Amino acid sequence: MKAKLIIVLSTLLFVGAAFADNDGVSWNELSADQQAVLGHFSDTWDSLPANRQERLATGAARWSAMTPEQRQQAEARFGEWRGLSAERRELIRERAEVFGNLSPEEKSRIRENYRRYRQMDKQRRQALRDRYRRMSPEQRQRLRDHLRDRPPQRPRDRR
Amino acid sequence: MSPEQHLVLLACGLCLGAAAMAEEELPPDAEFLEYLGMWEETDEDWLLLDELRLVENMERSDPVPEGKESTETENES
Image (cartoon, rainbow over all chains, first blue to last red):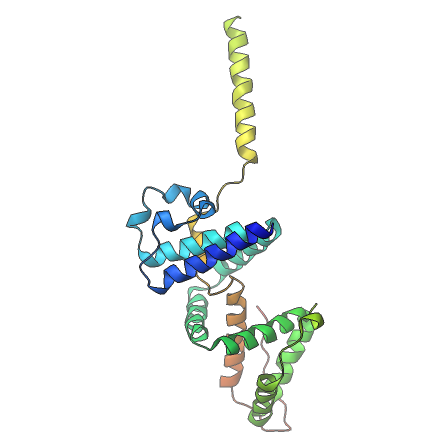
């Protein structure tokens, strides 16, 4: 199990490194798991655009590393994603670019805050939004400062 | 073996083969794999980014003066 995890992590790091120079990914650079998932592309792989190779290779690596339950959840999210309007998807993609340019610390902080937010039930999340909406600009700024300055949560506090 | 018995055996073989193939998990389609691969860390990223969009919309809406409450509502979707 540990060995498999190391192989998956190595694959992801390798794929990440391959993306850095944006030259696409050659078929031989793919792991056996990725090649198995992408089998029907074996003959046409070299003709695919580099960015498509990258997305497919990353997607195949992520799929291979998922448990059956994670796969089901990802398929459900994919269904939701496909149900969004083209405009909303484009807005999300734009934010993905902005988010990608943040520092690792900022990204980590946002992910941590979002993780905690997701743990709340729907009613509490709505109440939080309503509360935020009622805040003055000064109160919102104080809240942002507070969230930024708060020390990261210790692992043992996580549920 | 009669031709009828041959046919029955062949049909059984085909049925067993089809059942075995159905049990094997098919690889996901390309659109789904591309979707999985388009996010920086995980496909859950888009839920976070969508939530940020809602917060931005709230920021853009007229902020209420301190001490007063807004009457706007926004549904989670």
